[in-house]
Figure 1 (tube, rainbow, N blue to C red):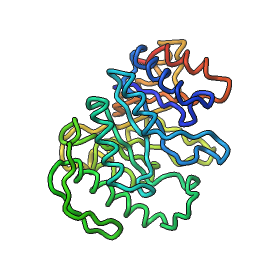
Figure 2: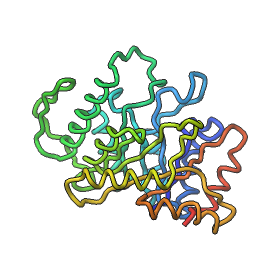
Figure 3: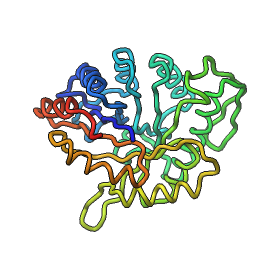
Length: 279
């Protein structure tokens, strides 16, 4: 299992440059990946929000080893061809370290007159994913769908990674549609519909169920990433390992530590990064 950190889109105490510092600290401490979420307005209208693609570009230029990812971009709110160009550029700047994640997007992050309903957004997501893959192929590509049109075009350069940049899908479990969509691509970043007690955390038994479901849907045996996440006790390596090992046993290939400090908690967040992954 690989280990990553998710850093806040609001920066560290509102400072976007410190995201780069924390990413460097993660690389030095032995983490395998650094991930950012993607919102236009982050968790409320008054919160500081930075662009994750630009922030990851800065991180790419200041790190050497860690994989870099977006988890996840609301593809129906973006132009697929613009995202394809940005992703290819970032894959080259990072020398092939990029992972891109896509989903429908948070219903609370729609502030600009978007009128598509959830069914239409799902259609746009699926079309957009096909366009991304087609443009990353480096071959002549055209698409004439319900929501998008791409006339014959060839994107150059191709991504560093072959056959393309890995694509992860985000979505809620136990809803089946996101997992079905993920099975057609390279990975799944599940969130969970909260239960009657209000608990929305992913548990090892959820990972096991997702792993079984996705495995039954996949037509090939190509590598597939299944992402679990949460918080592990960095000050106790034994407890930390005990916390994440059931997720690995259930089929998770990544554990992503949520480093999302409230204002004034940045030192504790940096300490957790420096303590290293729970491996």
